[in-house]
Length: 252
View (cartoon, rainbow, N blue to C red):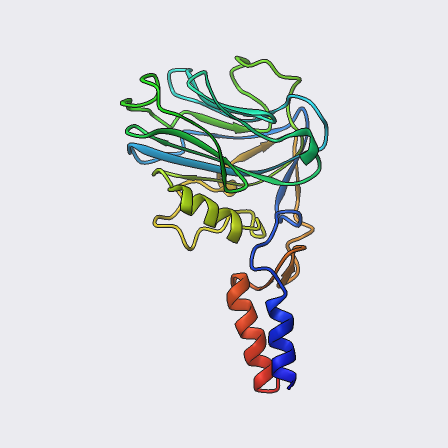
């Protein structure tokens, strides 16, 4: 009877989690940023970049920019749109999402073009000749929190937090992007990566900080409660449920 009650209770807990309790958040006040130069990303015909973003202020603010070794701006995220080689790909964080974390993900392939997802949902895509059929070098400079090139109109650097910046050297499918959102909570400072076909080539630890604060206040608890799911250690939510049930059965 007790086991049936516990099983019913666990089934009421959703499997996905949010980033509201993200560990190792990079806090920015508009002047700070995190950057990475020459990350040695392997040459390929695809790329995926993903980051959790929380904006504390309404308006148009910088989130992320990548500038190649020839000083050409390739990727730019603001709080309301994503651009690739100067072309608008899709709209991003609406004003209604202020103070709430969103996972922004951009994928690129020389064959299929660019797609942008917010919280696992496709919000824009582009297949123009300017984007496809190109060989691009992603070993220039990456910056999050404030744009590098000053090429884009904005009100300045992000006033908010960034977490889990992760780069893969291949184009992630829309299914895997959605899986990353549903399974990732940023608890370790990274999005969930175990279920992906390849390991990431860049994570937040690779970035150097400038005038930012790292908030690790959510990193201490081995049991991770993030508002819409429960995890034990590094287990995902589903596995955590089975472990808890097993412990109840054996009487621990």
